[in-house]
Length: 310
Image (cartoon, rainbow, N blue to C red; front, top):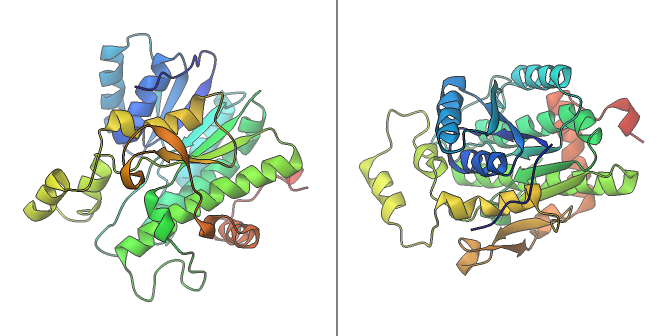
């Protein structure tokens, strides 16, 4: 198991911290001494996760705060309150997401749910927290992508899937967009001397409630066939302890590099210890990455602070 380096004195925000990889990352970062803000959509679930972690590690420094990445007003409120309470932020972990809803749902702001929650919400959160991050001595932004990014395509003509919604390509687009966000932020930091590390990771095929609940979003319960399919799939899978390690490496390891993509090293990139993985070609074109950034600023109404635009 990956041993998280000493994190004492660091403030970390983890989105989606109440379950799956977010909860595991919170548990292990806090055990290494970090003070962790558990950014969750449902505070009651966050408090339950906090109590579970505290039962194991009574000295863990954990705080639950609400943020709904499908609501840009909620993102703004979260960032404003954190900035009012804290002088700087050492690490932002963009972990929360939804996967493959069966129908085309919309966020509060009218975006297709996966593109809005998985990408536009984290984009807005990252930019709003950027001044706090740059006030830290060695800031990092870790953005969770997915192996689905390899089959993703940014459809600038229909980013919101209004013509014909297809849940898997929509998910793949959102996770490719996350990877582009990480890569373009790394490029901006390097060219402008910010000293910020922007690092991407993916968990491979990790057994979490993202797979089991995502496909039934909007329904009372996933079908029996769907539940059995996830449980007994012949595709290699791993537990959440191992699946969280690429994200933990990106968030905490001194050897992690900005602009790099980390994931499992095993068969098909689905399981195994952390390694550097190939960036898909669709995530490495500077012109496309800059275009998506500009479009995202227009859609969210959030842009770089004026002092960082040059």
